Amino acid sequence: MGKSRNARRGRAAAEAVAENVDGGLAELVPDRERTRAWTLLIDGAPQSHVDLDDPAYLSFEYQRRLGHVIDLAAPAGRPVQAVHLGGGAFTLARYVAATRPRSTQQVVEKDAGLVQLVRRELPLDPGARIRVRSTDARAGLAKVPDGWAQLVIADVFSGARTPAHLTSTEFLDEVRRALAPGGVFAANLADGPPLTHLRGQIATAADRFPELALVADPAVLRGKRFGNAVLVASGDPLPVAELTRRAASDPQPARVEHGRALTDFTGGAAPVTDAAAVASPAPPASVFH
Image (cartoon, rainbow, N blue to C red; front, side):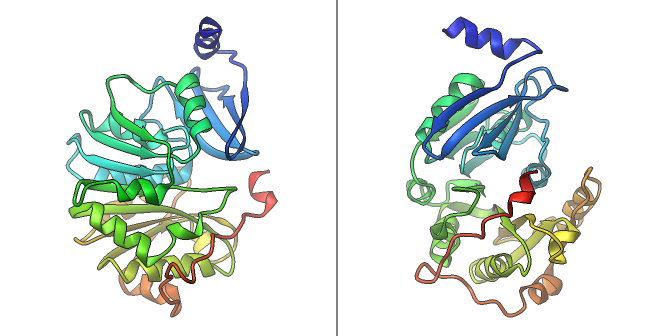
């Protein structure tokens, strides 16, 4: 059995792998243009893309934007201590390990079946310092020591929606507690017109962090279509100019909003608390077709 898996991973004409996990039907679909690259889908929704031969390659546009945040979180190549809330195929943890060797990372992924599938079919580099916890994202974050992380990345979706308890000021209190001074928090958010969820998340972050930036496709920011936006927050000034340059030069260019423009974008939205939190909106079926 183990031999057939290795053979499947190693040949160009690889076959898709499908397995029921806690979150639904997980599929690993081979990338026909990259020999040992795979896309992870859950119930048909693309979640992650991994190239085992080149873990620094980021295919999904939102992951490239998070990659820019990772690149700018510390001087190039310097190891960091990172927490990933939401594991998927561990794409961003692999990216950190490849671009910042000797980094120490914790991945929190609630879906134990998914963790087992990814570990088996897309094994992590045994030399990478990556610890994976199969537990709820907020519960896992609570176990991170005070001030341990230089980077906290939230990319958690259940049924293509961000769970409500990961959208509140109380959740961000836990993020701030876990972050080292000058540490950076980045969250992958998804929303569509009229952008109520996105505006509320910016207001929530502004209630807990003095420095914010938002990276998104201009069409998403204008409320023209459903899509992803990366929210970046810190207690220290962010490298907005360089983040803007990198986002603009991507294959799918993005805009960076910050300062007064970002405040105006919230349109007076109020911070979200645990008592009022709801999950992010479900994407329309057309997003994945």
